[in-house]
Amino acid sequence: MLAVYAARQSADDPLSGLEVGERPDPTPREGWTTVTLRTAGLNHHDVWSLRGVGLAADRLPMILGCDGAGVDEDGNEVIVHAVIPSDGWRGDETLDPRRTLLSELHDGTLAEKVAVPTTNLVPKPADLSWEHAACLSTAWLTAYRMLFSNAGLTPGATVLVQGAGGGVSTALVQLGAAAGYRMWVTSRDEEKGQRAVGIGADRAFANGERLPDRVDAVMETVGAATWSHSLRSLRPGGTVVISGATSGPNPDATELNRIFFLQLRVIGSTMGTRDELERLTRFLISTGVRPLVHTVLPLEEARKGFEQMKSGDLIGKIVFTR
Ligand SMILES: NC(=O)c1ccc[n+]([C@@H]2O[C@H](COP(=O)([O-])OP(=O)(O)OC[C@H]3O[C@@H](n4cnc5c(N)ncnc54)[C@H](OP(=O)(O)O)[C@@H]3O)[C@@H](O)[C@H]2O)c1
Image 1 (cartoon, rainbow, N blue to C red):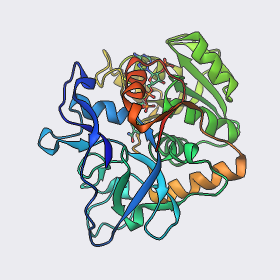
Image 2 (tube, helix red, strand yellow; image 1 turned 120 degrees about the horizontal axis):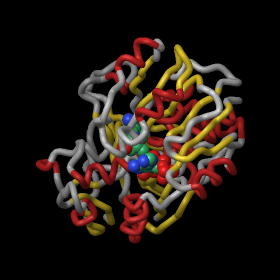
Image 3 (cartoon, rainbow, N blue to C red; image 1 turned 180 degrees about the horizontal axis):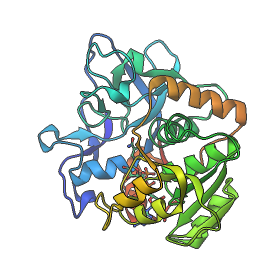
C-alpha cells in the first residue's frame, strides 16, 4: 500500500529521512481491526519522529501519522484514537506508563490502511466532513483536554494561547471561544495573529508583549521561547497548562520563585482519552465549530505538507486525502 514513512532520522535535516512509497499492508491481530483511511492529519509529532525524538531508530522504517479517519472492517465511518494502551490497561489511556502513540511502536495513519485496537475507534458523525474528522485525534484532542479537563476554568475566563498559527493553537482558540472564554493569542507574525482573531480570538499580541490584564490561564506549546512570558502573564493562583515545547524544553530561567510566590499551577497535559475524543466530536456537532484547515493535499504529495509544517508557514491543520 502507499504510505508516508520515516526511513531515516536527522535532527538537523528531518525531511531527508522522509519517504513516500510502498509499505506492506497491516497484518491482522487479535482484538485489532484495520481501517481503510479516507483522510489523515499531519502533526508536529511527525516532524519530531523524523528528528529522532520519541521514535527509536531501531523501529524504522515506521509509517508516520497519528490522525486518521476512514471505514472499519464492518463498514462503519470512524475516527482513529491515536493513544494505544498496553494490553490489559484499564482507565485513562494517557496515564498508562507503557502507552504509545500511533507511529511510535505501531505503524501510523499516513497510509492507505492502519491497524488499531477495536477500542480505539470513535464513530465519525455524519455531519463532520472527512477533512475535518482527520484533524481531531492529536492537536484538537490535546487542546480539548488542556482547556476543559486540565485548566480548571469557567466561562468568562481569560486565556492566553502562546502561538497563533499551529494546529494546537488554532484548536485552543476555536474551542475556547465556543465555550465562552476570552481568548488571547501571541504570534511571531501579525498576520497570523489577525487570522486567529478571525476564528474567535478576542485579541492578538506580539510574542513577549505586555498584556493589558493578567490572565486566568496560559496554554503553552511553544516552550523555551515563551515560558517566561507565560509565567509573567498569569494572575496570582493562575494556571499554565503545557503540552509541548516546539522551541526547546529548557527556558533560560524557570523562575521557581514566581511559581511559589504567586501560587501558580503548572499542569502537564498529553493527548486525551478515547472518551474525550468522542466528547470532542459531540462538542463540534453541537456548537458548529469546525477545524481551521490550512491545506488539503493528496497523500502522494505529503512532502509539501511536511515542508510547510517545518517552515512554520501555516495557520491551522494540514490534511492528506486518498
Ligand atoms: N503533548 C501532546 O500530547 C501534544 C499534542 C499535540 C502537540 N504537541 C506539541 O505541541 C507543539 C505544537 O504542535 P502543533 O502540531 O500545533 O505544531 P505546529 O502546527 O507546527 O505549530 C507550532 C506553533 O508554535 C508556535 N511557534 C513555533 N516556534 C515558535 C517560536 N520560536 N516562538 C514562538 N512561537 C513559536 C507557532 O506560532 P506562530 O507561528 O503563530 O508564532 C505555532 O502556533 C509541538 O511541539 C507538538 O509536538 C504535544
